[in-house]
Length: 132
Image 1: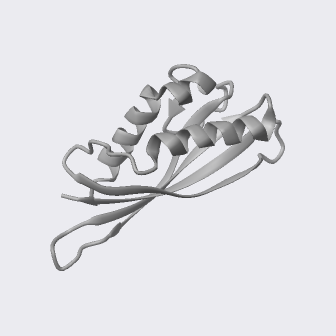
Image 2: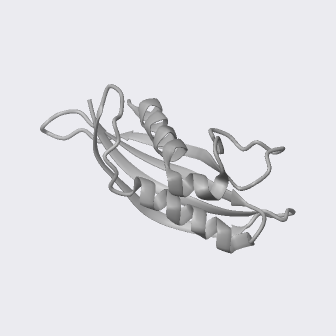
């Protein structure tokens, strides 16, 4: 399946997006949470891939999360960063190495204060379909 290639394309889009960088600064997209990194930043979270083949050919469905972590300005900044991510990815035409991106849709965003910390997080869920 093309999950790694999809994640790379998402990483590149977010890393190059000026609206995201205006909030986070450059180089603030990670594939895991860096506990010593100062927010705001983005974390590419869980990705679940499933067979989505049809009578016309093979395909894959990918559901993945992106987390927007912030400290100052709390939930408001987390939601602003989440909005920038949504704008960068929803219905985007990404170049996925070795696959064709059929569609990429934002499904939901949930924001909350992280337990036992002064951090806020907005978790975005996306759904993508790819074909070889």
